[in-house]
Length: 333
Ligand code: NCD
Picture 1 (cartoon, rainbow, N blue to C red):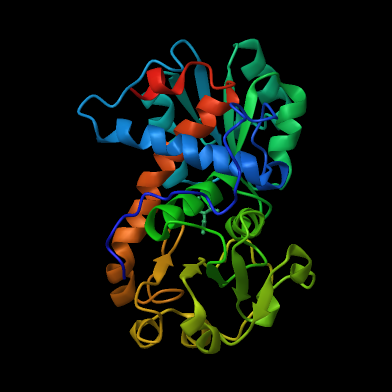
Picture 2 (tube, rainbow, N blue to C red):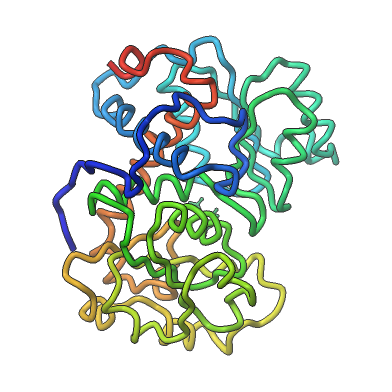
C-alpha cells in the first residue's frame, strides 16, 4: 500500500472555485450537493488540515457560535470529530447524550428542537436511528442542521472525509475504481459514498451477498458484483463496511463464518490487489468478519488517516455553512 501523500491538483472535476459558500444552510445529505460543492468542501478542508498540526490548534472563525451534538445512537469517531472541529474553530460545543437528557423521559424530537431553538443554538449535529430525522429537525428550528447519520439513509460527512482521504492519497477521484463491500442494504455510509463518488466521476462497484444489495441499486450508477475475488484485481480502493447487525431484522446469510469466507478481506485477498490499493473502513471495525485482524493492522494507517481527515472536513463544512464567515486565509492562517 502506498505511503506517499499526494497533494491533488484537481478534484477530478474541472470545477473552478467560484462559489464561496454552500447553497443550502444545512448539510442533510450528499444528495443535496453538486459536484462543485463537494469540490469546494474538499478544497476548503485542505486549508483547515494544517491547523490540526499546530501546537495551538485553534482559530477564531466560529467564536461566539454554539454547536450541539445531539446523538440518539452510539458514536465515538463522529461525535468526537465534530466536537474537535467545533472547538478548533472556537465555537462552544455541547454534547447531549440521549441517555442522560430528557429524551430518557420520553421527550420527542420536536420538543427537543424547540428547546434548542429557545436556547439560541446555532448548529445542531444530529445522529438518529430514523431516516429523515435531520430533515424534521431542520423544519422545527432555525439552527443549521448537519446530518451525522440517519438510519440507513445518509452520513454525508463520512463520505466527504472518505473522498478527501482518497484524493490525498491518489491525487484524484475521477476514473478511480472503488469497490464498496459488504452490507450495502443497511449502510448509510455506502449510500453517501456512492452518491459522492459517482458525482465526482469515480467508477463504483458494489460487492456483497445478493441479500444485502438493494434491488434497484444500479439506478445509482454503480456496477454490482457478488464475486469479490473476481473484482479485487481491478480496484484502486477497497472500501469495507461493517455488517450493520443492529439494523438487520432477519438472517441475510447463513453464518458469520460463511460471510467472512466469501466477503471478508484477508491476506490472501490483499495479495490479489494492485500494489498501490487503498483499503478503507469507516470504523468501528469488526476484526475477523469484514476484515481479518492481520489486514486491519496493515491498513491501519489509512483507516486512521480517515479519522484525521474527518476533523478538517468537518471544520470546512461548519465554516462553509456559515457562508465562509471570514476570509479563509485569515481563518486558517
Ligand atoms: C458508521 C456509522 O455510524 O454509520 N460509523 C461512523 O460514523 N464512523 C459506520 C458503522 O457504524 O458501521
